[in-house]
Every structure is written in C-alpha cells, then in structure tokens.
Length: 303
Length: 269
Image (tube, rainbow over all chains, first blue to last red; front, side, top):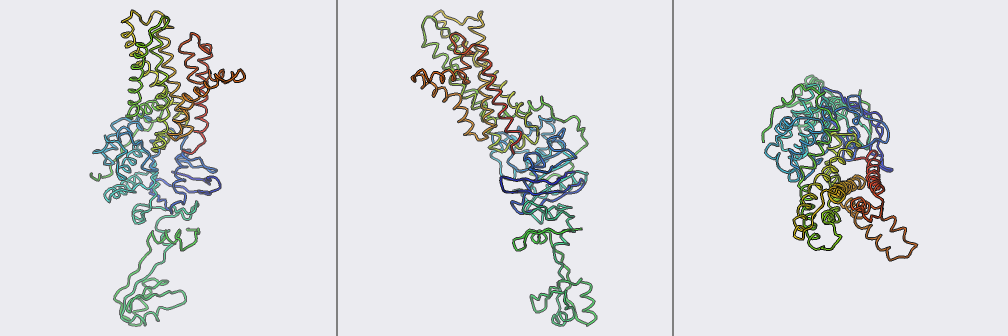
C-alpha cells in the first residue's frame, strides 16, 4: 500500500506537484500516466524519500520511506536506470546494495538470472546499453524480494522480449498480493498491464480510476455500420443526440446509439447491414482526451 | 538472453534482511573496493611515498637529520591524493546517479555519511600505515649505508610519526568526503579540497614578507589542516602545541562532517 496525502513540491516559484493524494492498493498493478513534466517522477521521488515534500506526506505500508525498517525488502525502486556507478560491475553494484541489508550473495545471483543479465554481470555498468542498464535497475529493485514495487518507465529501452517479461513479472507480483506502481508512456503496454490508472497533468491528479472505467468515461463509443443504403439508415437513426460521420458512400460511424438499437432500427426498415461493429475507445484515446494539447487540462469525477 | 517465467519469489523471513550500521559499513566497503580508481590512488600514493622518502633520505645527509622525517615528509604530496580520493568517493556517486541507489538502500542520510566516512578514514589510515612502514624499510636501507637508522626504541622518532601521519591522511580524506557531499560536483569538490589543503598554505606564506600587522595571517595559517598535521607529526619546533594540533585536526573533521550532514539531511538527492 502506497499512500500520498496532499503531496506538494515546489522548486523555487515553480510548483511541480500540487496537493496530490492517492492510494495504490496491493494486489493490483497501478499505472502512473502523464505527459513529461506532469510531476510523476517527482511524486515517485518523494515517495521514496529522495525529494522532501514542500508539504504533505507519502507513506509505504503506513510508514514514511525513511522510517522503513528494511527499505529493500519493503520497496523495490527503479527510478531511472542510471542509478549505478559506471565504474563498477553489475554484480558488484548488486553486492554492495545487498550488503546493506545482509542479503546473501546467492540472492544477488538469483536476481542476475531473473533480470537476464548473467552474460554481462561481470562487466562494468558504464558500458551497458539502455536495455541492459534497465535490466540491472530491475535486478536491484528485486534484491530484497520487496512487497511493493515502484518502477518509473521500466520498459524504456527494453526489447519486445524484455517488455513482455516486465509485464508478466508485474502481473505475477500483483497476483501475489504485492503493490505495484508503474509509470510508462507506452499506452498499449500500459493497457495490457495495469488494472488501475492514475493520470497526472501539470502536477495534479487528473484521474484515478480502474482502467476500464477511465476508458469508458473518457472515450466515445462509436458504432461502425456498412450498408448499401447508408442514406436511408442515416435518416432512420438520426436524432438530436446522435452524431453520424460518413467516410465512404456505404460507411457510417455512429456515435450516441448502441449497436443493438441501430441493428433493430435497420431491421424494422428492412435495411441490409453488411457490418455492425461497436468500437470502444482505447486507453490512449482516454489519455489524450485527459491530457492532450487540443483539450484543456481538466479533471473529471469518475465514480 | 531468455525471458524467464516469473516464479521468482518464495517466502522469505523479512526479519533477517534488515539494515544495520555494520552492514552499511560493509556496503560502503564493497563500493570503495570495487572501483579501480581507489586502487590506482592508493598505488600512486604508495609509490610517491616510498620514492620520495628514499630520495630525501639519499639527498639529505646532515647531522641532526632524523631519517623518520624522510619517511613522513612525502605526505606533502600524497595528502592531495587522500583528499581527492575522499572527494570522488562521494561525487562519483552523484555524477553517476549511484547516490539514489545508496539512499534507496539506506534512507537515513546521516548513517550513509557516517558509514562512508568511517570506511574511507579506516581505509586511508590502514593503507597509509602500510605505506609508511614500507617507506621506513626503504629509508632504513638507504641510510644504513652511512650507519644511520630509525630508532625504533624511541616511539616519538619512529612509530608515533608514522601513526600520526596515517591519521592525518585519514583526516585529509574526510575533508574531501565533506566537500564531496557539500558540493556534489567532482570538479568543485576537488578544487575545494586542493584549495584548503594545498593552495591556502601557499597564499598564507606570501604574508611572511608582509609586516608585523599581517602576522596574524601566519598565526591563523598554523591551524590549517596540513599545518596542524605537521605540528602533530613532528612535534619538535612545531607551530602548535601537540594537543592543540590534535584538537585542530579533530575540529576540521567535525566541521566538515557537520557541514556535510547539514546539507544532506535537507537537500533533495
């Protein structure tokens, strides 16, 4: 369980994070979304005690990070892949981290295997590719077999295999009852990984809701209809709350009516339908609607 | 590289794996010992100490010259290596981002500072002790050709200068550590360390030529770290009383550590 209560961070006269409150529950993967500069990383840094909040507080398992008895076994942190001395080998980096908690070197070898960096573990981290650095960061986060994972852009720079591995890994961790907070800019990946989504923009929480609710609330459901009698159908379904866009002579995109109703109306009038496809919006569309340039930043209650 | 299925966790007794100061020391020691720059610095310091000590022993052949002076004199050069090693042990973490991993593992910043300071100080003390003893052997070999020797039966002319010199090296390293935490940038911390250890004494020396009204500058300069160390190492004709010299060195360490702690505890990492 991660809790933020009224977190605020000002750098000089710039407010990076303003009165942010949320709870990240165990047993599910919570996605943390927002444009660059929205305050996600600053919020994560405050959670793990690297930045001191101007006001408010953040706790993990009910305690501020700095008061945790054994931080590495409570929280696995990946804030950026470059939190590693470039002159030290991956294995020695992990050994030094493990030593602070008395974690045995067998566990160091375990996380090296888990993260798939066995072949480079005795090479200095300065020469690592972005993906390898990311894997080393993930290995460090796993050292203490933590109850909570806080991962900022964990799939950044990973190959498709690595991306899939991270997804399976965090899903598995959540299924074991662990708390996972994960940020990413890859919407399709997030849509597959997260159960719950927190969206930040301009330092504030814009939305905090289960993924499906968020998508439903912030996207329009369109029904795509293909029919040789498009004009007749358009006349039949037309109404004040219905929006119809025709992109081809036999094609209508209808917003404002459920697919079943359109089908019934067509059947009543004997209009043949060649296609009737309801499309639900994607997380990406919901995200763009919440944060996009075309739309002013706004918040909306999602119940 | 293979993707592994995720069965990665097993029940673990959390109580076993938790931090302690001893474990922080262990972590800091691994960090120090696994960087090549550490061993390069120590190797260069050792080579300089032994080489310069032998040169001095060879060159200075006058009555009243105690060979132990040749052993400890090279500290004038190696002090900078100690200070720089201390500084980069901290700034290297900031420049690479390692400091965030360090604070993630140990969020109690004062404890990180203490662990790093203890490890660096002990490492410099022990490595300097070994180096000075090696230099003593080398000097003995040089001066034995003219029937001189280090008088080991008199600690104040043998063991004590070596131990105190080693302590001084630890003090210089801690000054570097303090500047490292306060300034965070490698260039800045090294400049500040070199400035305090090396440049300020030279600047103060210019005032020797100035009149009586500037004598206080020379008096004050006796309290600079290197000057105080010299008073502590070779007590004959020292500018400071021996206890005052020790206190001065301790005060520099205390001031540095307090300054570092003051900025560490409030500043974002």
